[in-house]
Length: 342
Image (cartoon, rainbow, N blue to C red; front, side):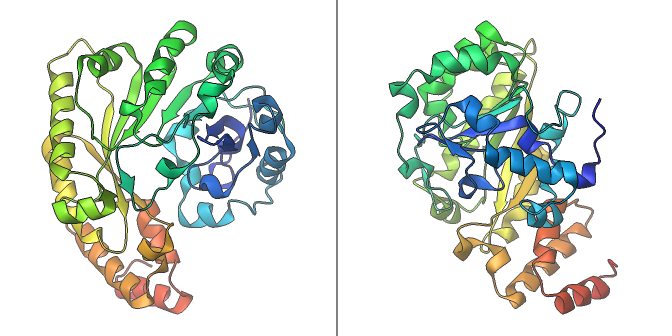
């Protein structure tokens, strides 16, 4: 079995592909669509999977000469992702691994919101319905998958989500499903059936504020009360269905320059409902990112987060560390000294 050194290795390029609505193919959510490894309009999935861009990316990790992901690993610690690292006993650490183990199934950008940090709803779509990709996926990709990840647009209003569930149950019912939703859907009989028949292991609701005005500014077209109602409905559904294996339920809070003071409120909300809180830090667009705020604003945010952590709350290493490392060296050392963290 391949020996893996966690601090020098990220399994993403060896395990994962994300299919974007316009046919572009990426690998990592942190690198995003700014780092595309190919296009299905020009090459097959197999050609992209073991093409020159991905082979070069893998070689960086195999040789220890990491450049592409250097900033992310140092500041976001994204290589510690538990979902991807759960594939460590399956991964083929070679330049040309045989099979995709995790698929980000962003088949279309259909969404009922227009979030200020997302543009997927505005991108070209329809590629996967107009070409024979589903048959190729069913034959060549789906049987080998360990994880399928729906995180683009709103999965519960996209027909592709339900179509994939039927297909996956035919060829690979044990594959783990991860779904990220904005919570703007009704728990219809169709969705109840989907929850009952699909191997959903992680269900994440995006919630960045409990202030209704701020929430609707971040998630344009969104209704905070509807999200909260949907979360409660899903919790009630699993509570009333003890025969079902309850997925890991979480709130994903994207930390920005104007919402970080909402973290304690959202944390209390998740505690009361027995669900987890996951914090990430926004990188783009820069005008909403704490990482691009003035040094004074970043220090103010760090002081707030550190004071909150002193109350016994554990903060996300990724969000806290990336914000800390965004500071100039002098200010960073001063902060660490003043707060006795060094």
